[in-house]
Image (cartoon, rainbow, N blue to C red; front, side):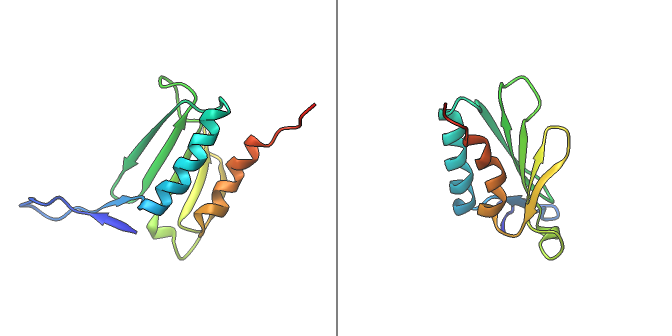
Length: 113
């Protein structure tokens, strides 16, 4: 878990959760393949106090198709990572980001006729 704190904060230190370099590499590799396939077009990253969120959009002006979430407080229970659909359903949750992202990899596999 990467925690960043403001360098010149005079008040209480607030921590934010961020994706680290290896996590972002896995996510952006999948994102690039989905953009090449024409499925995704935009993304947004949010670093919040209790979780980091990578949101994927088909168009910039709509709700995210999927959210890839990193929630450290769920590490020991349900798993650190989750993929959440547009309607709020948790598609996959787990401790390993690569295995959690496999649920989105299946979207690339299509029958060739």
